[in-house]
View 1 (cartoon, rainbow, N blue to C red):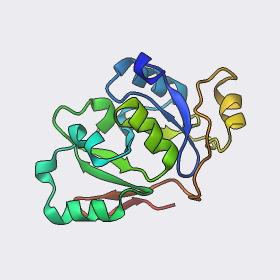
View 2 (cartoon, rainbow, N blue to C red):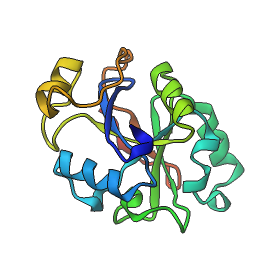
View 3 (cartoon, rainbow, N blue to C red):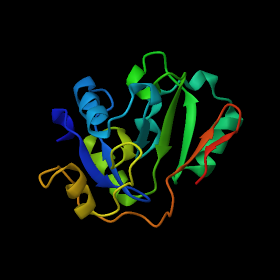
Length: 175
């Protein structure tokens, strides 16, 4: 499904997420339409390991101290805003010069990213500003009974990932 420009639902650390190939403009357009979301917001990338996100970030702007901080928190439920690679697609960065990335410890995400062979876009399974989906039944109710869904269990996190700007250390999302 992911290799064919489709959007899928899958379990994340705290809820069901929607994801697609971050390099497929066609898939991202489908995702933006499903969520009724502006491309200006950008998206979070989720990965099984750091190598899966390297192509999207500009490592030369990360200090050793900042990298050490990343690897202290990763893998885990922490999303970091990192300097975007100049060739990162605009739909990932939105109106920003950063890309939001998370190396997950959630087994379902690790298996999915490894099977796909790279990072994928991760956003909550819902229409923008609506309640996220916490069960497969809610996903089907929101997006239709034939919506592609990876069965599995969501993790034990009570809230979405914390978002931290690695450059200035500010906590952007903490609920």
